[in-house]
Length: 133
Ligand SMILES: [Fe+2]
Ligand SMILES: [Fe+2]
Image 1 (cartoon, rainbow, N blue to C red):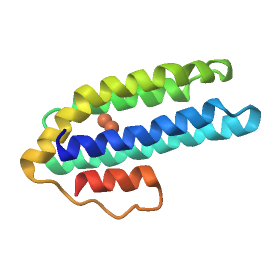
Image 2: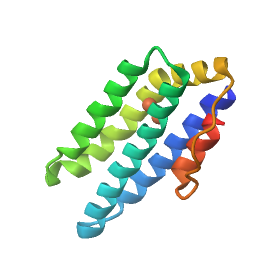
Image 3: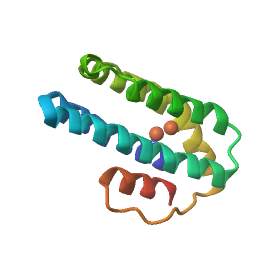
Image 4: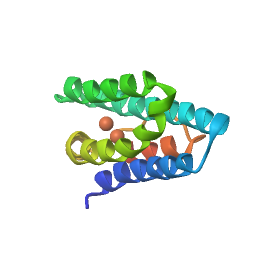
C-alpha cells in the first residue's frame, strides 16, 4: 500500500475504534460521544478539504459533496437512529476511503505532499497531519 493511502487508512481506523467504543456506551455518555464523533469527522474533513485546496485538486467538488452529505445525515439523525448509524458509518468509510480518499492520496503523492498547520492535539488529526506531510 502506498504511504499516503496507508495514512489515510490509519485515520479511518481510528474512527472505527471510536465507533466501536460508542457502541458500548449508553444514555448521556452515548449522546456526548456521538456528538464528539461528528465534530471529529467534521475536523478531519476540513483538513482534507484544505489539502484539496492546497493541491488545486480537480476532484474537490465531488469529494467535498460526499463529506457534506455525510455530515448532513449525521447531524439530522433522530436520537432513535443514532445507534443504527454506527452500523452503516463504517461501510460509508470503507467506500469513501477506497474511492475519494485513495484518489486524493494519489494526487498528493503526485505533487509530493504538503504541510498543514499544526493540530497535534487530537490523534485523528495528528494522523492526518502525518498524511499530508
Ligand atoms: Fe478521509
Ligand atoms: Fe475524504
